[in-house]
Length: 473
Image (cartoon, rainbow, N blue to C red; front, side):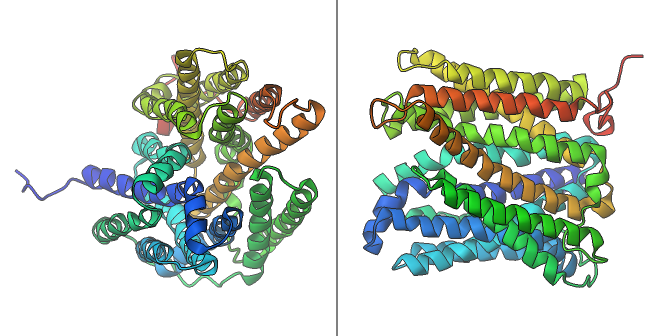
């Protein structure tokens, strides 16, 4: 018999997956939880709430700049050192945020937080992918995806609760015990030695950093209401131009900062290109729904947040069924059918009105959460189903870049559609007309359907060695 303290490899792997998921949740929650605390923080800093967007943007831009660096860091210093160091840096930066005395000290602390977060996400995923057998990949990825689905939903109401009943400082102080526990668990659970002294790709870092940050800045500008469309377009064009130059350089470089070879793998390419369209649509829901509840339905922020919790409940309830669905029908069929259901969910949201019974609103939101979770998990697992170990570093970094961009684009495109729709159909009141939101939800449904065309060419047994799906003989 084993001693009580002994742990099997599978048990250790489960703890590792939950450690990484917890780190993801801490990082992603931090990007959304402060939105409802901005007025009180502005009062403490003796400035206007709108100026606090500088701190919010600094965090997001730091993430965008340093995510491409994460793969090189993991190779150079080892995943254990980088992941543990990232948790410590994020935790220390959280302390600095909590004791900030003005806007500029807060902005500097947020940049440090963004640097820590940029290392945590792709390196943490890389650790899980390298230690999880293919047969357990669906369950592991399902666990890793819930922070990305839950944090945007839980962040605003949680931030409002903490700010109302405690103070905004606790938003960051709560990270201290969580970060220290995460660091200690990292020392015990995470293995991995440096992979070699790969030369640093300075040009690739500069081009990718400029491209990613300009695109995320454009997304941030578009998320403001109202926003300046010319500024959004200029920032977006600069970002696309820099990313184009970065890709051309990375293809030619003998030691690229980010290895693009994984894009030649059909399942990974499908999850990146078509999957990004799905993620843009999926990530628009936590932005569009509460905005519609408040501006078109006339509900207060607290009620809107409570209604949105049903979206998160759908995300959670789908997790136990994910592995069974993948094993029974396979990636291709599940993603195609569920992709149609994602579109149906958006159309159902478009038909909601202020007179719709609350139970129907909750049911639609819950259904949208179920489909959202299934598609997100399926695409994330498919991404790495055929990636060989030697390509996993570059694949993890690429996936993190596209997931981060999709999250920002989901909000940005939703905001742009509302802006265009309000120009075509001007409301009679200062609030956005319900028709504007209907147009936005229909556009997201169309994006979901378009993304299906990238899944159609996949064979029926794509990723079967991961899902466990066996075609009938």
